[in-house]
Length: 365
Image 1: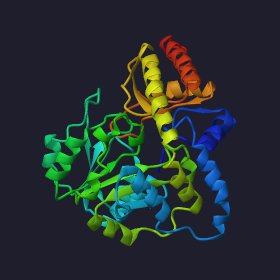
Image 2: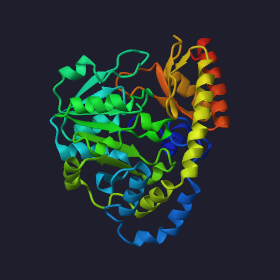
Image 3: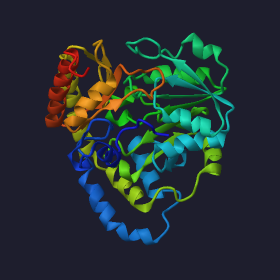
């Protein structure tokens, strides 16, 4: 599981003989501004809470989520990262079969198969990855009772408008629809795309979110889901107690209240994703996809280059990018990079330009 997943600096440092602190990580899509200052303060102030069991219902954090996203606390469940929730859902609801809209986050497949669910992949086979058509005949022909997809999609960056998703969920009332909105906090005009609030009233919809990507503390593991009462009752029957530790709960509670940090992040990301996209677009042999969030999928058009060549060159420059081979439907001709700070983005662009140039001159062969 998680083969090819980004972000393991200790492993990468050991593999390549580098100090993890020297590595510039473009493989994991985490807020480059880091975590809010209030998170450090809250964790230190609550540190002595580790002598007690955490609140198994995460009451304070659920209350903060409810206030932030205008949803009822009873419709919120918190997990040890969104990944715990992806494994919980099929274990609790016990579907026999499921559809995954591909290419997408590889853990969906692992979570479903660990619960003995038969998986059918419905592919977006256009190399330009246009917006996935939820009215696609393939979806109507399939009989699977469970459907899961990302919005915005990881790794392609597609983002489906809220109205289309609501229509799809309503038209598939006999199926449970699970939507991963892990990167929705980074989206401009979020209200046009998120169905978080609709998950409270549509009886067959579950929306899952991450708190650690936007708020910059993936090491603490924190995510949540929103759904209506019937599905929520089933999920609580299988939810493991005490899976979210006290420090993570404290961090999430204060981070959600930091509106200045959220605004700063969105303004920063709006500027930097444009800068990095335009820079990548000027490198001959690469075709980046216009980003909706904090990462960019890149198709390698040059005949002489595959993803491993770029990875091997860039690691010499102490830069790590994401190979996309473990995404169903993607090949060695695709890579993904995170959006980081201006200085770091400039460094990536310079190194990437040199790598592409050297490969085209066949210096790797």
